[in-house]
Length: 114
Image 1 (cartoon, helix red, strand yellow):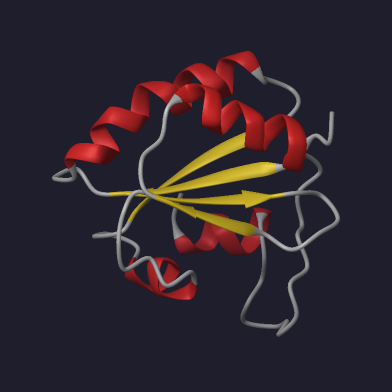
Image 2: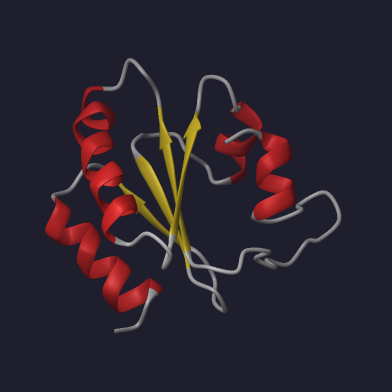
């Protein structure tokens, strides 16, 4: 995901100060870097979750080395950083790597409220 895609699909921070999510499904934004070991560990987990929850959530990836402005927007000073975005609430940040079960719990309890 680049800045333009973020502005078009997630939040236009150029025109709005208060959070207004544009998407029609809850989302996860995965801030990562190619050189980051923990990021490489979570990549296959996020791919699996994107398949498992296809049609229910959207998973975006943001390379912090290429999209420094987006990384700064979420204060992504340590990675991986996951931004969980529900449809009608404020996004929540999750710093660091975790196992698949942990991410599933956040998706089910926070994003989908199941």
